[in-house]
Length: 74
Image (cartoon, rainbow, N blue to C red; front, side, top):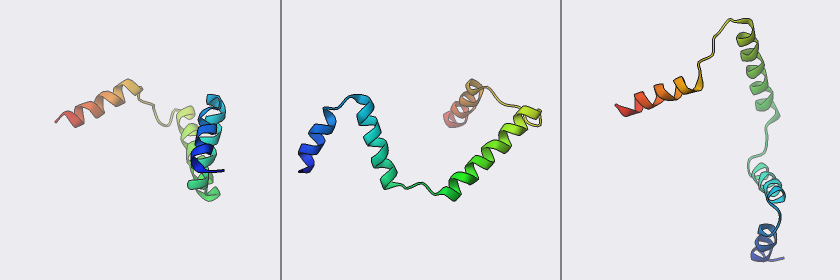
């Protein structure tokens, strides 16, 4: 099947199916590294424990974005 015909067929699919195809294509271009994924999960779990225990405090998203706007407005 030629690329253009394949693209036309994919575009005619429902959005959910196109999203699944897009995700599969992106994964094939950038394969997941299990070691990196495990490291990120470990960091996320540790940070969640720190927040839950009160060791660190969160900052509301609106406040974070306002700080970013102020820094870049200079």
